[in-house]
Length: 288
Image (cartoon, rainbow, N blue to C red):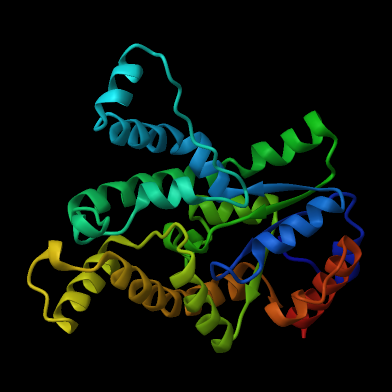
C-alpha cells in the first residue's frame, strides 16, 4: 500500500498501519498512544500468546504444578484453575514458555525442546499476522474503530521472505495496511541489548541461524555439552547477534514495500495528528 502523495494518505477515511522494527524500538509505545486517541491496537504478540499458543503456555504451567503433590491432587480433581494472565504490557507467560536453551539447573531448556517451541512460535506468528485483515474489519464492525494499528514483534522479519511480494504474510500486510519501519540507530541497538539483559522478551530465531549461533557460542566459550551453557548468557549474546542480523532485512522490507520513520522523530509524537503528520513526511521522503 504505497501512495502517490502524502495528501493521498491523509485523505483516506480510515487508516490501517503495521509497524515493525527492533524489539523495544517504540512500536508498542506508539500503539498505546494511538489507542488512547481512538485507534484499535492489535498486538501480534498478545494474539500469539492467547489464541495461537495459549494452550501450550497453560499446559506448561500445569506441567510444573503437577510436580507438586498438593497441587497435582487439586488439578486432578478440578479443584483449582490455572490460566495465563498475559497482557499487552506483560508478555512474561509467552517469554517463560519459549524459554532459553542451556543448563536445566539454571532454568534452561534442552536444545531439542527449545527448537520444538520455536517452531510452535513460527506457526503461531504467521497465523497472528494473517489474522490482521479479520481484525481490521472486526474492529470497525464490532467496536466502531475506524483507524487500526498492528503492533508486530521483532521477529516479523524471520517469518517472511522479504524479497518475495507474493509471500503470504507480505502480501496480506501490503494489501490491507501501510507498512512502517521504525528505524533505530546503533546507539538504540546498544540500549535495547542492555534492556533485554534486564527484562528478556519472547525471542524467535530462524532454525538455521539458531543452530549456527548455538554452535558459535559454545565454541567461543569452550563449552562441549549443551547442558553446560548458561541460559542467561546465551540469551543476551544471541539477542545482540539476532538484532544486528535483522537490521538490513528490516530495511529491505521498507525499501520494497513501505515507509521509514526514525525512532528519534517518533519519540516526539504526542497524538494521532502528530503521527499522521510524521507519516506524511515519510511518504514525501520516499517519493524524493
